Image (cartoon, rainbow, N blue to C red):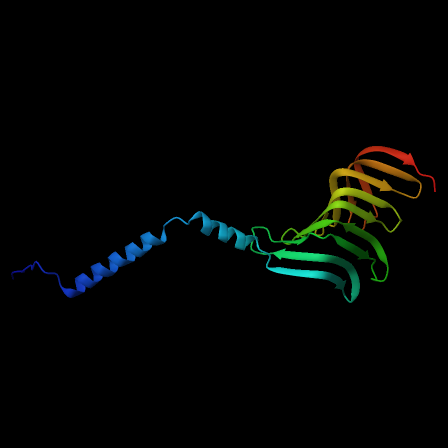
Length: 194
C-alpha cells in the first residue's frame, strides 16, 4: 500500500493548529505585567473597610448574663487583608462584668484600638486608662488584651494608682479581670494623701 502525502493539510488539522495558536496567544497576553495604576487600585481595594459603623454600643452575653460591653464613636472592619482586624480610630470604652453579669468589675477606655480577629487580641493605644474592681487605676500608652489566654499586658511605661500609693514602672502583666497584676520593672512608689 502506498501513502500519498499532499502539500495541503486537512481542514481538521488546520482548525486544531489555529485553535492551539489562539490559546497560546491569549495565554501569553494574560501573563503581561500589571501597570502601576492597576496595582495601586488593587491595593486600595484591599485596604478599604468591608464594614463601617458609627455610634456603636455592643453587649456580649454568656448564658443570658452580661459579660462585656463596649461603646465606640466609629469602627471599621478590614477582612480583605492578611490578618483581618477591626479598627476603632475614635477610641473605645469597655466594661467587664462579674460572673452573674450584674456588676461592672473593671473598665477600660482608650483613644484608639484595634481587634485582631484570628488572634482574638485587642490592642489599646493612646491614653489608656483601666479601673479595677478594687478601685485601682492603671494608666499607660499601650496595652494588649489576649482574650484567648485571659491576660492583659504591656511593655510601655505604666502608672498604677491605688488607695494609698502610686506605683510606676515599665511593663506589666495581669489576668483579664485585672485582679492580680505584676509590674515587670518597677520604678518606685509614691505615698498619696487622700
